[in-house]
Image 1 (cartoon, rainbow, N blue to C red):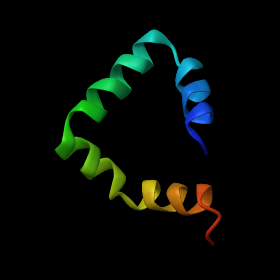
Image 2 (cartoon, rainbow, N blue to C red):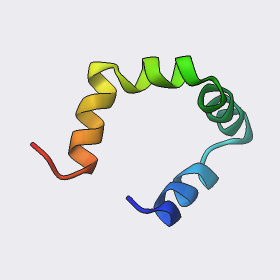
Image 3 (cartoon, rainbow, N blue to C red):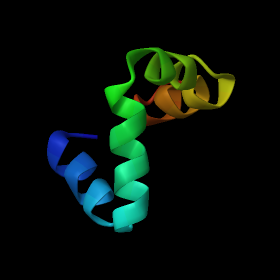
Length: 51
């Protein structure tokens, strides 16, 4: 997914959801915690085309 795809996805979120995403991404430890979860790792692999 390129930056335009991410922007479109972000733009489709409600204002409340956008605020939640911004809050999580502004907190480095919270972002790392979420990205290291098994669910996030599986999604990242799927988006990157890995099996």
